[in-house]
Length: 112
Image (cartoon, rainbow, N blue to C red; front, side):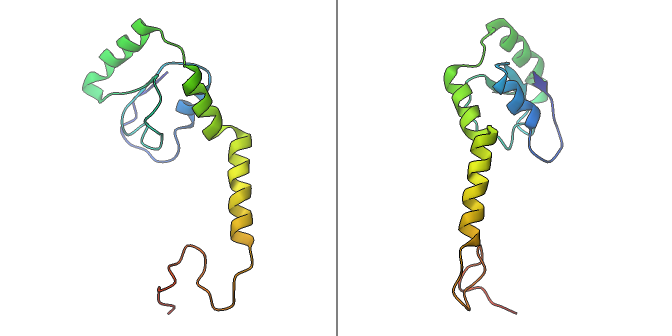
C-alpha cells in the first residue's frame, strides 16, 4: 500500500489496516506521523525517494511479520481500544475531593 501524503490531519487508518492485512506499506513521514516507527514492514520515504521505496518493497515481497502483526493487534484492535477507553473513563469518573483541580489541570494553575 502506498500513502504519499504531504499534508493532512487525523489518524492514518488506511496504513494500520494495510499493516493488519499484511501488506508492505510505504508512506511519507507526514503520512505516518501518528504511528509508531517500530514496524519492520512500514517504510518511510520523502517524495523524491518514494518510487525507489515502492520498488524496494515490491522486490522484497515481505509480508507483515508476526511481531508487526502482534503490535498492530495490541495497539489498534477494537478490544484493545475499548479496554483503554474504559480505563480512561473509570479513571476520570472517580470522585474528586472538593476544591481539587479538574483532571489534566496542574494543581498550581490559576482559577480565574
